[in-house]
Length: 81
Image (tube, rainbow, N blue to C red; front, side):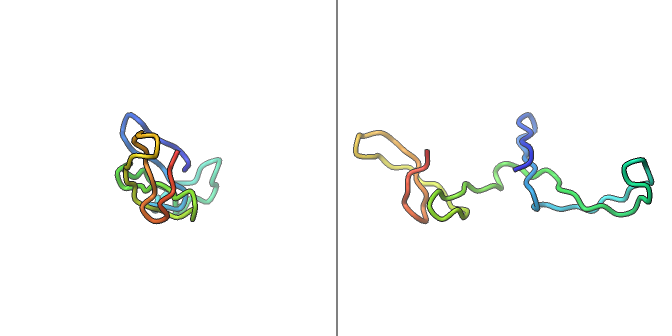
C-alpha cells in the first residue's frame, strides 16, 4: 500500500488500478509522453491479507475460548490481530 486517503475513503495500492496519463515535457520528464501510474481505489474494494498464506481472504467473526469476539481469516481459520 502506497498511501491511504482517509477523508476520501480511498487508498493507492502498488500495481493496482493503473491509469495512463499524458504529460507535457517538463524538468522531471524532458520528453513528455504517456506515463502509467496508480489511481486511488475505494477502501471497500480491498481485501485483508491472510496471516497464514499471505493471500487475500474474507473476514469472519467468532468467539474465542475466553468468550471474546475476534476476527478470523475464512480461508485458513487463523485469528487476525
